Length: 329
Image 1 (cartoon, one colour):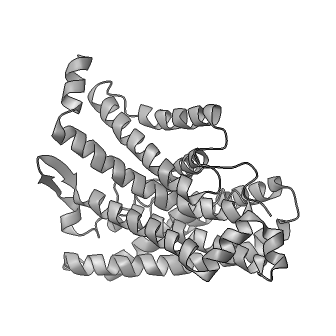
Image 2 (cartoon, rainbow, N blue to C red):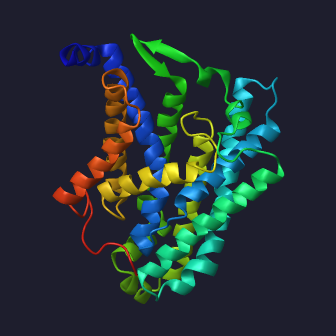
Image 3 (cartoon, rainbow, N blue to C red):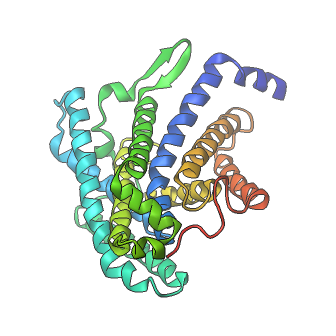
């Protein structure tokens, strides 16, 4: 039985589909986790509100799409509105992130890390409850996915296509493209801009960077704001994916894999986050195929992700590319 299943898994159509789905999951994971790793890399802040802000981004993106898109709206227009939505959400969440850093996080820099952890965990509870209240005012179900937002997806992204015998979801291809664009954009920002230089200098030695005239506190604000903006942009993309969807539980559903990716890659290293996202995404895709086609128990792929985390912590506690002492200020 297992040999027959292995033979089926190794056929080009099945293996190709698993690889495409794995890359799509990797793209989503890197988009979700990149903001988290940027914030920890420079500031040493473990932001437990990251998942809730991703969820807020999903609802805001859905709000823009539902407001601007009608039944007669064509696919190209829907796609154009989506990119407008993702830019708007990124801008709004960036401003919100800057406000959170200056008013709530900054006063705790001189306190032990547990204060920041408790604060961001409390923020999670507050944000989730506010979203529940707002949804209740408009008569929306907070637990179920927002179907009206899902329905704004262009028709061609809902249909699968066969390429060289491989079944490909166009939405998966779209997610891979956006994931690659996100990685290239962050890499260019960190390595090709003056502010990226400030961020890298601050993450290496914030006191030396301050002594050289860099306004480290302002850099902290910008990085935290951008990290939250990235979370919102990722949420906007998840709003179109039926596996995720805009709902209050999306906060926890995104926070857990984000932490797994960041820890496996090494806290505070963007390169490690990208590599870990590919490792976790491909592992998730392979194990999902096996548990759906052989063992037929859909809950185990998530368990495997935690096993990846446990094995990494045992074999290499600092993560794939992490170094001891990174992060903090």
